[in-house]
Image 1 (cartoon, one colour):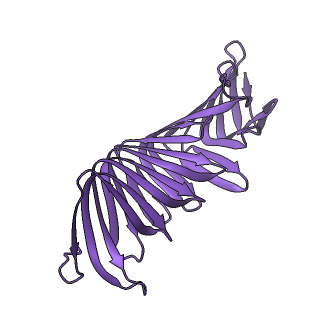
Image 2: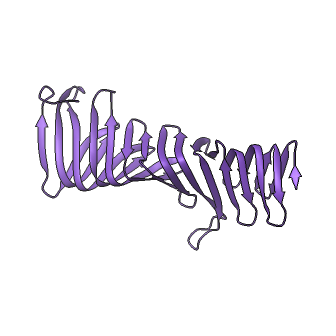
Image 3: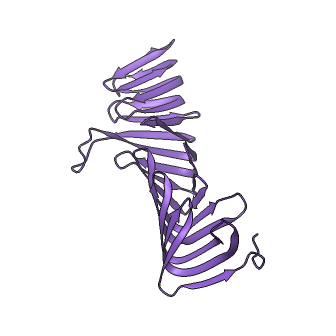
Length: 263
């Protein structure tokens, strides 16, 4: 069946609109063509694209041609773009009382935009049940002035705010306070914990290293501290390192500003 000149299909909490719809009644699947928008009012999400494939039996949605996934929680909007977006509705498990959730697979050229948050990756998986984004393929995440890099990056969201970022293998955090000098933290695995979307403390596991600028009470730079230690705990305040705890044979070198090669 072919429907044209503006189409709207509704099913409980879901709505699909497009310029044209090609629908196979036996297979319960269709292609929405032109200005296609799939809305899930229960999850408060949208999938947009030039073309959207929808299967009513499997509850899957696949969007092509400049697709966008939009999620709105408490007035805050998250935008996710990629070459292809694939969404599937899941039923709750035994530990979850919510009715349904949606998983999102995105590939390639993945980009995330949100207030005080941006991310790039080759591909992504989003688990709607626990609100975790997993980014693959040279992922990079920016939150405020902090950059996160790792072979795999996991971002846990809670109440539309970042709760934790996990950097798995070749982990690196770069923090720039003034656009000139950069604090750096690296290790094999790093867990960064947030409070109200601002970095609170960081756990570094295996091959830990930190390079950070030391300031006096008047916020004047007095030197650079370089520390190597297997495991470290770094506490942040005002978006900068305030205290570090070292575990297992730490080695530290303090250099003044003139002795340091800042490049």
